[in-house]
Image 1 (cartoon, rainbow, N blue to C red):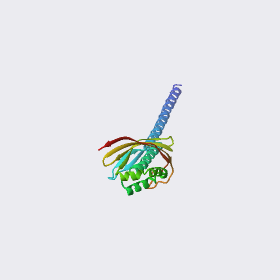
Image 2: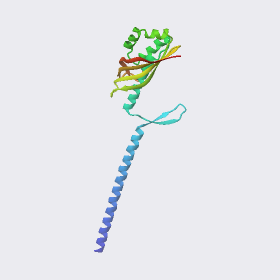
Image 3: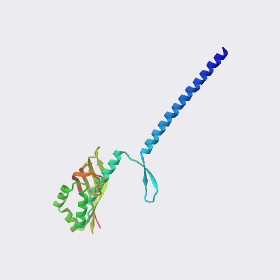
Image 4: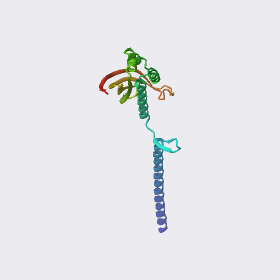
Length: 202
């Protein structure tokens, strides 16, 4: 009788040890799986950049949405710089405006400026004009935007500052080429504010 009890006790002890071992293995497997998933997720958000000197730098990927926003704003700024960064030289003005036409539809806005002899005045008065971004606001799907900036116009004797606000649509899905690396195109641009803020005589 004692032998049977001893055997039964041994079986119970073995079952308990087996259950504990199985639970321990399950916890280890689940923990390992979770650790693996975390590691994979972290690594998928990282990229390695090879610099010119051969060293490798670690960078974190941004989300698709934030990357698209950055690209769109960069494209908008580049378009405005090509449209408004002008020297008092007819060839430079023509070259710069032609580069702007690869990033957006410039026909209507150029026609309106030419109608008031805007470019001729820059040349005749020896003005150099530069545009500076204050901010860019985009719609949720990045298909529409407003550029808030200002123009600095330097002459031989004067320096003027003009507010510049434009509104436009952004077309996506174009081929990325050297003249348009973001594959975007600005359309229906219109100036909603452009007026003189300050004038300083040298």
